[in-house]
Length: 285
Image 1 (tube, helix red, strand yellow):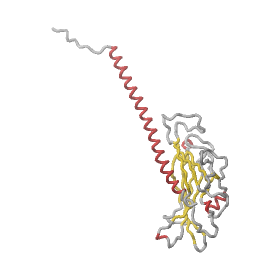
Image 2: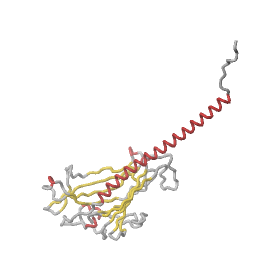
Image 3: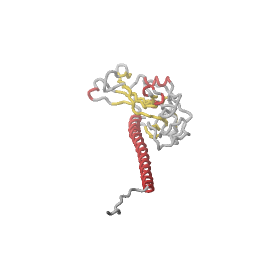
Image 4: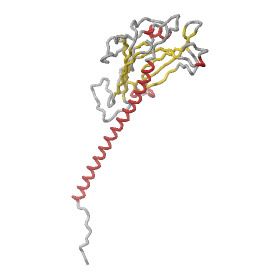
């Protein structure tokens, strides 16, 4: 009989070496997968913020630029420089994470729109009042999930020839009085009002450096009330010619690849901000 066909297996050193090589390959694949996953999460959040922020910015810029109107209200006209006013933000007492110290400044604009041909028999002129503001929002009342949302409120007013005043249009879907959420995870909304010389006179932004201003000159309660009624309050002696705006959005999810910077106050954790800036020359002022 031939005894040279003895079957041999792997030796212990060979098994150990093979196992070590396999472990190294698996570890490399795992690390690559984690890095890919974090990169995907970051890109997904950045894309979401970019799309939401750009659409919101374009929409707001187009509408704010319309501020101003012809003086149809002969009874109690609003000066042309008061077709846009700025209100102070509401302070958040416990800012942290996605909730900033406040939800941003409040801007209100008025401008005229042309009624449709079918509506001209009922409305000679229609004026639209729009307000953009940040609102604190806690889904389900959970404080840990608190954040700011950008809101838009609009109402329409028709000019009444017999009284020479504007009255609010009710129960008309073409000219609604409604509120809507424009953007989630708002982190800052700041403005600067400048005159034709580009000299700042309202808002917390500096028009050139975009740093904070100490004099905000927010509309007081009486001016806000008068603005709604188309009555001049005289708070802004300067005519607003240019409006600078800063909009920033915080990522809704924490991203592993984003460093947790303890220098932030309040600390946003592993979240990042996306900034948008715009300068608008008001068309009708």
